[in-house]
Length: 387
Length: 229
Image (cartoon, rainbow over all chains, first blue to last red; front, side, top):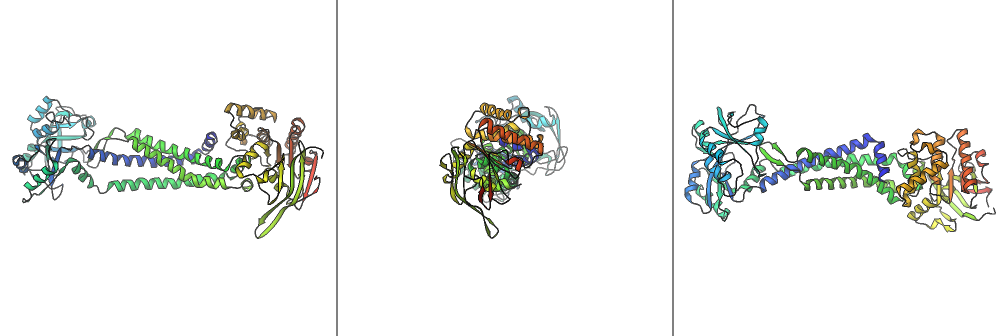
């Protein structure tokens, strides 16, 4: 039976090729969009449960006075182990299109929270000597392995940025290149000293967010409430939340991308369904006489139905496999930059592939069912008279 | 007819609707065809020849009456039962050959064998044997479009024979062929009848084709007017 189906596919290579190609394209797109969502989830779920992020209660883009860090430190909030801060630099490297994330950080705390002094292990991998050098060089910066590979950076190279939020030309020296084996942390970011930024920008003494590491046994909710209470009556009210919640809030700035991507994915699959249905109906219409011959030879209506369904499965299933396979081949394990979010590893998961296979099978079933039923219901005499 | 009857047609009627009008194509027709007999069905257009052939091959059902083949009333069979019966009991030869253009000659002949649960090797062996029998051993890998009309009809005959059916039904088998190919096909049918003892029922308009048969049944107005039993 499969040979008969294959003979038909071979006989109409352009038509079946285009249909399978449209299915492949749809499933490739679907897998890619689905992978963005999966990767976003990974970013959120991979965030530390022992880390709080404090940002302005007004907006994520509203700066906080860096004095707030000291205020949290001295308040001795139960469970708080260390307090650091990050500031988004933005800026332009060579060309505005050459984007990568740049953060000014309080390096000693950054090292304590993410480096070789972090109790949970390093998120950004550097040797102790490299951390020492980073701490001591005021205009020093570290960059991820991905960035170094992309631009051919080496330790000791100068790195010059044109400021956007912080105007002027900013000169740095690369003191180390970090790696990371935690999929939540990318290798595409640059970190440098906040004091260097602060002094160069006229000592505004502000930062973007506080990063607060907690003891493993700490009550995160109570700590969050206590920290926000410190700023309740100030002009800089804060919102403190777990890193995972912060990441989710950050991603929500894109709007409901889950719904948007889902809608696009399913719309494309639906369009493909219409194309596949059309192809299969054409296929039956052109082969009415063949259906008559098959039934004359003793093929049952159910077998004829099965033949057309199998044909739809070969075309749609083949297309789905090709599309999903291509997505896996092209994206899997690759870092991907999407606006300001960098996915350290864009993972086309097995679940996404299984989903694609199910969509392909359902597509084949739905697109093949109506033509198959039409074919199986043809009376022999009428079918033989056609054409 | 002194042979044991293979097919007994009893009081068969068939009506078709043409627009608002009902046309009775077969009018309580009865006849018999013996085991190993070669019968030609003749008659003017609309006399019911092809309809009778379709009913004998269970491609259609009569409105009333019964058709007994080897003692079994096939009009009582369900659709699936009829399909299985067609596969093992009848070989069809059409005027337009009705080969599948996407399959090679040998694959076309193998097609009905797919329903018999045979191994691929055995299917191929039987198909090659059938093609050899019709003189097309050297064309097994040709597609229908690469064959002449006469060769296509030979492939169709091989396909009809390959399951070793109880009888062959041929509907104007030489209708689309040139005179030379027609003679060759009729010779082949003679050979199948005389050499292998096949029962053949052939619808034809051509007198010279009908003369090859042992008996000519004339139909007119849905009834047998001559040559019936």
